[in-house]
Image 1 (cartoon, rainbow, N blue to C red):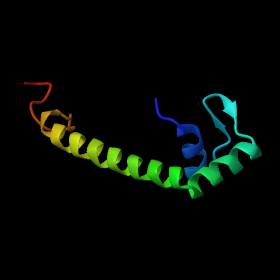
Image 2 (tube, helix red, strand yellow):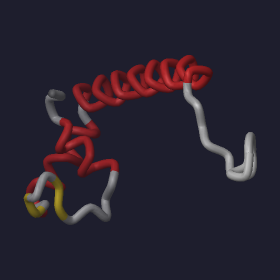
Image 3 (cartoon, helix red, strand yellow):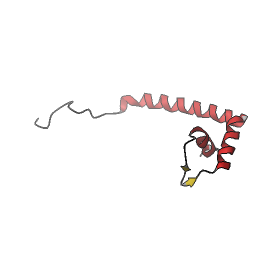
Image 4 (cartoon, rainbow, N blue to C red):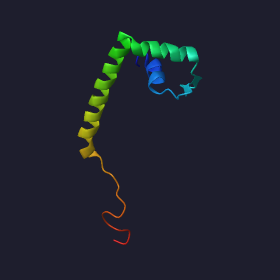
Length: 79
């Protein structure tokens, strides 16, 4: 879906060893680092931040629709 998602993820999670069932090579880590320092990387970071805010807003808006089970709340099994 997203262009450069693999490189973005590799750069953001340095301890990652495997992604999408493929080992992460040193050359790929270097490429991810170069992307992060470039203007394309800065634009990608901005896009990710906007999407994260939108997703959080959508999640918070939908929380009123979610029914969560709370132990001990409501009717007991005897009733």
